[in-house]
Image (cartoon, rainbow, N blue to C red):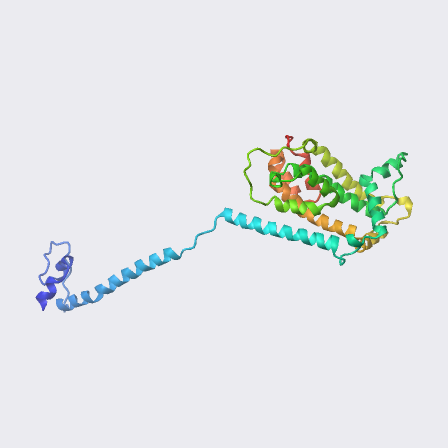
Length: 336
């Protein structure tokens, strides 16, 4: 039995299992131990644990392969941006539907819907349009009476012109938007409609500019109006900013001789006006949406601003009206 076991051992174990002691000069010499176990038991112990080692190696190898196959790929940054644009685009189109239904068609918001507008609301809208940018009131003030300006409450006139003045300044911002080529319609028509119906047309534009870019070779040819508004962007900022400032002052101090009361009385009127007139109620929606869209558009177009003013414009973009004025004042003069 002993002979059979010895010959079955691997060659590299024979020096260790040999009954003949090693020479003192051998590098594998080990100190003699008393009462050592027979070699037969050592052989049996070796044969006993060697299969376990093989099994363990197989287990480790199998575990490694299993882990590598279950590893999930890390999503790329471009995929994250794609899904974010998709979510934002859907959100904006839903917001457009809510905006039109709630402010134009449904009877639940304050005031009259479009299909049931009263004569008083219509007359008020016509009077506010005639006092656009306070041109007629100032002409009457200096003695020019080609048309007499309608006498309306200064709070309503101030709110109307504040929103229109802010909308007026969006023209150069839209015309210099680096993503405006994704909107295939006329930018002139878009801006004209926005000037009268504000976010009814700005919300869809914000959704369309999130579409995937398309390579169509020749760039869009802009009209002369677009080029002019872009080249005189600082002047547009000064005019629009001045109108917004005058609107705030007019709402508080305008028509002091017309018995509209003091600041407290005007504030009470404004609260009642917002809760009873659909036009005034819609202006609050417009202001809230402009507060969101202004930094969004400016942040995407900081490359159009003078390089040494880009950081200032970026921080000011979150300030309503002021940020848009800063963008227009520091816009690099270039052909649109």
